Length: 174
Image (cartoon, rainbow, N blue to C red; front, side, top):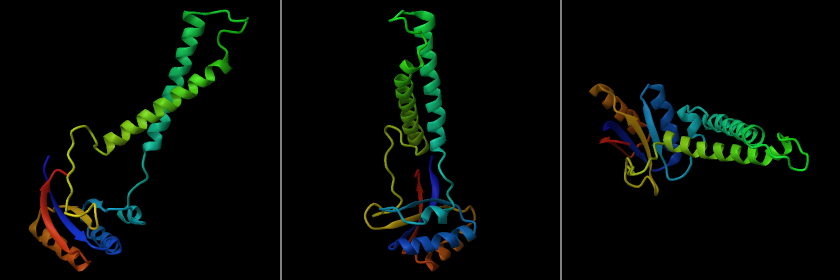
């Protein structure tokens, strides 16, 4: 799906960081910020919430734990009970390693899958960078293009006033 964007490029991360607050104050929708390395304080300036990825890990890990307990109980007690040295069939200590392993396996796989889905990293996806050099030494602030031309001109003027080197309009599937 193609969308229209305004892409402002910056040479310095602090200038980019200083431009984020006024852009948000004027209610322009920031799509993303591209940088060659992490910028301290950018998440806070963008108003990003904490990730819910640990919740996915917890829920699916608990599902793995319950699956391990049910599987072991079914196989050791109901389906194929064996008398091994007079020990009880549902020995809790014997269940611990498998429960741990399946909890970690399910939680880890679900975390990776949720990360790939949330970041839209699926097979055959091609990279699309908004501006030349954002992986080397440039920083880009990408806004969704406002529908009105007057708002586009206001956004351009605001970005240039806050240190943008260039402001381009792009139609891309970022």
